[in-house]
Image (cartoon, rainbow, N blue to C red; front, side, top):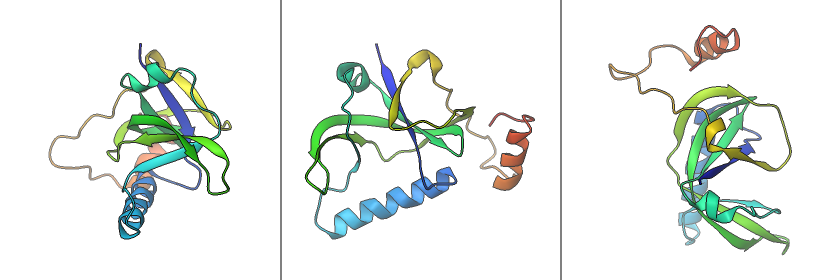
Length: 147
């Protein structure tokens, strides 16, 4: 049975911030001649490894809401820059926007059961979203819309 991971996205104010940061990171790795992959290092290794690798995603909490997810590709032994052993969570660069779901702050990462995941956001017909991001955020905070 699939289980997902939940992580706070510290330092990002929006999904676009996360996308920009990850794009820059991939470019830095490519320029340095390293494998361009997204990998989050964490001290604790998930004990439910097989369940996470069975289609699990990394759900990001941005400004108090789960807003986006990325498919987890691998969990592997890694080493931090200071030599400390850790777990590398390797994930797909494709960002899948979800319907916003409120989540309180926590440290590290948490398991997220499949039944508790927010659904992916609907794709908007007609070629795009004309609503300014600030207006969408304000309407979401007022609970007048949920995406």
